[in-house]
Length: 357
Image (tube, rainbow, N blue to C red; front, top):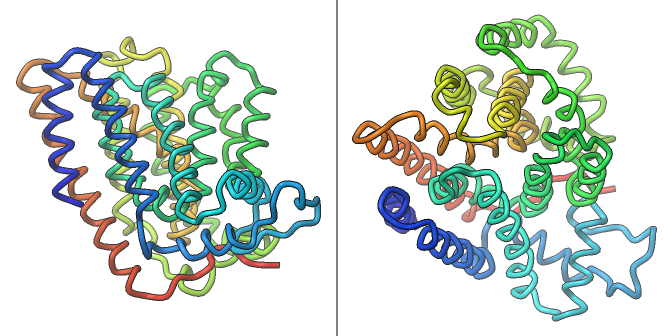
């Protein structure tokens, strides 16, 4: 699988710099379809048993009631989609294909709508998010890609339509609520100085309010059904030693530093940057809860698939290609790490992530 990713990135570089947009689009469609197939055909991945078990227990649409309780996860919207799929064809394999297909379609729409170099953006998504989300955390993938796709509503200041998207996404994963305050956060055009200073400031605030954060998170975790993010196997924390924190800080600073070179490449530049800032600040603020900080910050970390292609656009000629290769090497490392981590988890027992009523 790692070798396949290396091959894909090599082809993506060649097509991005030397092929027509039409051929790039064909490659994008082919890759998304291939990913859908791989998601549908996966076997024994973490949480897979939970989702297929929930599908088996899902009622048909005509038996669906307001008090119907999902099995294995908390959100009824996702259960209802499982119910509709079951009505079409009652097969666990078809269910995995269908859910993977929906997410990959949303991914395709995001890349074609907001990404200046879609094949490079897809490489970032595959390396950073695909395995954890679309192979494991299926509900979060669907909710996040829906919210990311609504970026144009933030740009056009269509607040209520954006809130409607959040409401729908909430039916699939409760973490969608993270998107609500972002609408107002995105209306602020932060200058360079504020962005550079916000990171050490939030680190200081996190350290000073550690006790209050811990008490608040623990008290609300059961109500939000995310108790296992802060207890049991998720309670271990590496704090600011988390390499992802420093990775996002470096990427954020670089994206800010090259603003003059790339802001004209995308009318969504400032929303993308603010989204990544929002993600990074959340990641830092909740750093004492590694799993919780990762799950809450990942939504707008997804903007990274638009951000890296824009960074590539900041350079020209041989330097541009060299930067692309360096980014590719980093993505190969991320993909390899996540794949080996998932393989290790496959050998252990599958567990429910959310608290059951």
